Each structure stands twice: as C-alpha cells, then as structure tokens.
Image 1 (cartoon, rainbow, N blue to C red):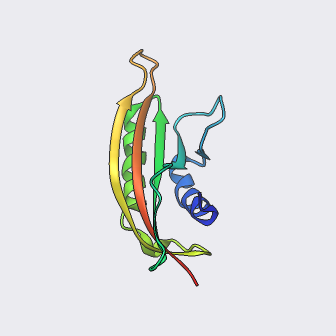
Image 2: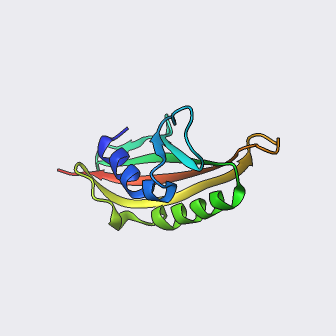
Image 3: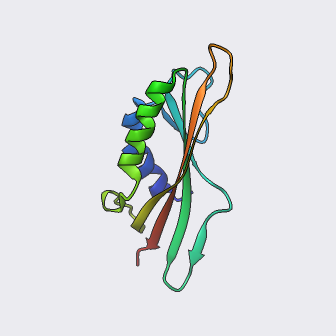
Length: 129
C-alpha cells in the first residue's frame, strides 16, 4: 500500500472511531466500536502515460450495537466521499475519492452478536513529478 495514502486515511478517519482504527487487523481485545482498513489487493490500476493510479481502500467498522455503527458509517461517508481536496500526499495528487460500495451485516445472530459495515472507496491518484 502507498504509505502516504495509508497514513492520510488513518489520520483523517481515526477520530470517527474514537482513535480505535487499525490497519489490516485489530488487536484481540479491542473495545467496540472500532474500525479496520486496508487496500483491496488486485484492484490497483495504473496508467503509465498519465501517471494515474486507482486504489481501492476498504474500511470495516464493528460494534455490538447497530446505532453507533450507523452514525460512524454516515460520518465516514461524509468525510471521504468526494474529498480529494482534503488529502495532501507527499508523492501523489489525489484527483478524486469515490464511495463505491457499502454493506451492513450481522456477523453473529446471538444477542451479544457483532454488527459490521464495509465501505469501499476508490482513490484516483496521480504521481507527482
């Protein structure tokens, strides 16, 4: 994953998760609600002539209650969707950020079960000279 993009996504979104946002995997006993983000492998698309890259970042949120998760989900979409101007990467220009996928699921139907949402955002980047 592009390091500056990973750092920027983390910095911009960690407050929505009350600082409980992790890259790739959360610690075992993480307090709810929390989030995990990563790049979707195999979805990077490059245009070497124009120096464009398309990267898809997936952010998953987890909670024992649906309402806090829905609030986080709405805040996340408001923050990231169409937010190119708010990113300042050292090695890339962010041309556009698009929200492309969303899903909410119940991971465990027991009364103490866990809710999860999945958001995917496509980052349209251009390599700086």
